[in-house]
Length: 449
Image 1 (cartoon, rainbow, N blue to C red):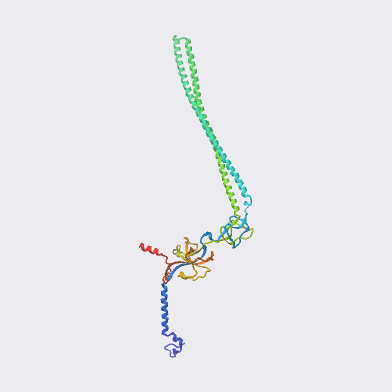
Image 2 (image 1 turned 180 degrees about the horizontal axis):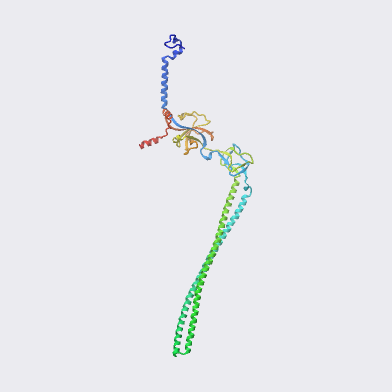
């Protein structure tokens, strides 16, 4: 114990302890209060300094266009590696040969497969022309049958008309002969009556009888001709129907042969089309044995190796990185920050490997960071619930370093509204989101009110 209590009789004199005298001096306590006030005033002033709200997230470098990203070259067909023309790190141009493969499927071993398929194609094409000529010949035959049938029908119709006219003529002759017979009969009956009365002689009666019999014979002959004319009309009608049926059958048969020839021609044309497709496929397949570079770039990794190795259809062979590409940054933000992001928004970027001094609230005082703009924002969430944001270089800021490579990491800050530091601290303590209302939105709300 130091015996410093006022009630302690053995209290030591304070003047003997210099450390104690320096602590209990009144001037020392005033300095402490003054320093506290100064710090308090400085803290109050700092609270009103502008602070730039931001959304921070890590990301990585990618290419802005899909054709500029690292490309994996795959085999279109299965084959056996025969020769390599490149190695890792080689610079290639579009169309340069990367490797050569040979055929492994037994259906394509024939070296003259394309030529033989072309021969089959020529034979089928000749068959199509033959069937086409047959169709033309049948068309000509059908036309000839139709024309001949028309003539035959006209002839039969004329004959039918002549027969009908003959029927009219025979009918008139029959009617005349019948009238003559009736007159001769009446005269005979009158002469017979007069002969019985003794007014006429038997000789005159017999003359009338002979005349009546002749008239009767003429009538019967005329009737026979009339019946024959009627029969000729029936024969003409039958012949007319027979001609119509005959030529109809012949035309139908010729059309049936024509349709059969056309069916065969169409089937042969289908075979020709298939052979044309096969010929084209075989020709294209022959060109797939040589695998070439799709664009200018650098061979970054050879996946398959060795000579004689068999690769499957669609299997990866090597990777080529395009020589010219436009860099962009891919970052992921939380759903609560999505309403804060819009296209064209300013972004500050810190690249891995580049030294930087970063003040997230004061981007203008940061050193070693580069500018960017929001290029696109995905409208759908990723598997982890975040949303992807693409950032392109800001042409109005410093150019990005040329040594950047695809796949490098970044630390991105999407800049939002400027607010006082006290407001930012109050927002963080209460868990409120950053301010994302624009001045134009606030102005529109006021005008609406």
